[in-house]
Amino acid sequence: MTQRKVRVAVNGYGVIGKRIADAVALQDDMELAGIADIVSDWRVKVAAIKGYAIFASASSASHEMQSAGIPVAGVLDDLLSRVDVVADATPKKVASLNLEKYRAFKVKSIFQGGEKHSLTGHSFVAQANYASAIGRETTRVVSCNTTSIVRTLGALQSAGLLKKARGVLIRRATDPWESDHSGVMNTVVPEHSIPSHQGPDAQTVLPELDVMTVAVVAAHTNCHLHSWCVELTRPASREEVLQAFGRAPRIAFLRMSEGIVGLNSTLEMMSDLERSRGDMWEVGLWEDGVTVKGNEAFYNYQVYNQAIVVPETIDAIRALTGLETDGAASIQKTDRSLGLVRDFTAA
Ligand SMILES: NC(=O)c1ccc[n+]([C@@H]2O[C@H](COP(=O)([O-])OP(=O)(O)OC[C@H]3O[C@@H](n4cnc5c(N)ncnc54)[C@H](O)[C@@H]3O)[C@@H](O)[C@H]2O)c1
Image (tube, rainbow, N blue to C red; front, side):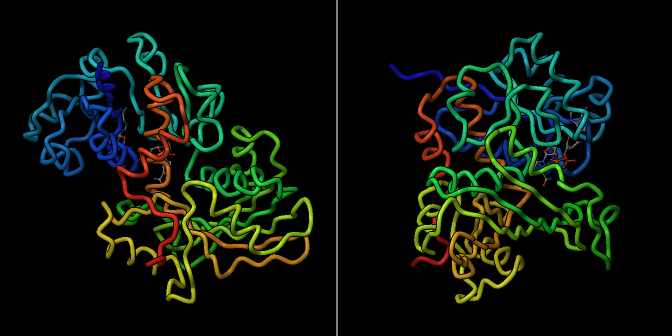
């Protein structure tokens, strides 16, 4: 007997929401029932061009959307009444106000990293804790930086190599489409608090991590760069550390020796690979920069902030709805549908 497709709504069609919607539409076990937003400009018009059903998240927005020529199929309540699960990608703090509504409609919900762990009581990174999300009412896919930390430190932890980790995060100033009105320029701004929130946030998924993060904001608009110093449980070889990263999902190697020398090189390469929007869903880790001295490892990696949480959200849909109970199988299915790789320069 073929299983019915899980019906998914995406509320908030911005940087993250539009990518989730496209990824849902690619899955053969899911159906994108529609997207919802409150704006009536080019952002939502693109969704109409793609043929997605569009709903107004607030009834007050519906009239304006219709006046702008957007074919509005109804309001958020209409969309919620016909789905199993909603991926909420509305802005930080807006999203938390929606949980009660989702509950009232008995719709499972997935939030993003702008929300607090306490909203859902569960924070999600597929390779680390898929099993504990199965059948839950709600979860939170952690932020882009936190996802990368859990993937990489989780890989070292699973290999029995991780004692403690200290990382510096050089963050992008703002997303490209918002750079006309936000973001720092011509400066680098240290974050006031140490640890920055990403280290403690990673502990909401892997509570035993001994991790500290220091973050600075720099004057570019795309991707974060992480530099890590890790104390290992014992002296290890460089090969052992590389094998640990190589075994974990969603970490792909980059090489300076092959001309991938900065965040910009990778962006160009993703476009040349004709990935959707030039996205990189993997943590891009510089293989030839990985250095191990005795029981210490040092490495750099790139986080494509606009895309890294998208495959995680697809897996969270499968976990919450019980569509797939084997996390590794879900990861594999998602990665195949999007086209993730393990090594960017392997021929
Ligand atoms: N941008 C990133 O790089 C990034 C990375 C990882 C996680 N996140 C997280 O993802 C979430 C969404 O962030 P984003 O960058 O996509 O934001 P965004 O501003 O690009 O998109 C938010 C969308 O929600 C819409 N919206 C606003 N109020 C709404 C409402 N009441 N109902 C429905 N829609 C509404 C906006 O019009 C917009 O289209 C946040 O939790 C953020 O922290 C963002």
